[in-house]
Image (cartoon, rainbow, N blue to C red; front, top):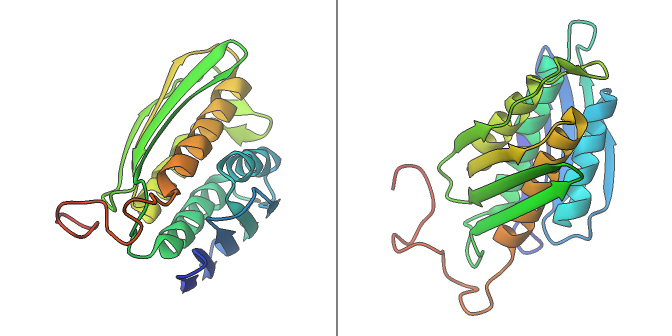
Length: 207
């Protein structure tokens, strides 16, 4: 994977190529929510568009994947690539608010996301579906995307749908809540803009 961070502008771009997928990603943490998404999976495109719009992170994603097999590799690898670019753009994570939380309603559904940009990846996923597919996409793949993103981005990520019936609403509220929580967490704290938000003096690994 070839990643190129831009520290001052909090931007990053990368290309990731395997035998299963070829991915190009660019993002800007200080954007306005502009996006250009093409994964070959319509529902995944829709969710990544929501992620960009509601986080205000500019996001460009292009994926060529082995969709003739299934959507697993495209879904997981896009999470890895976006997460990696996100971590690159954060750099040393100086000055960030670090924590973010959002509770997002969507009609009958309510989902809560809490996260820590700790550089210690962990996912708690309390989301249940009553359908195996949304369109052509397996609903079990959404957890795979969140797991891949959290691992690559270095995010402690808790996602919980408190209640909901419509599976589309459940998934979309997860991505929107993630977006709003990320928006809060990546903001620069004007009182500590040059400091890593940790008593350790660093965010990473098991330190």
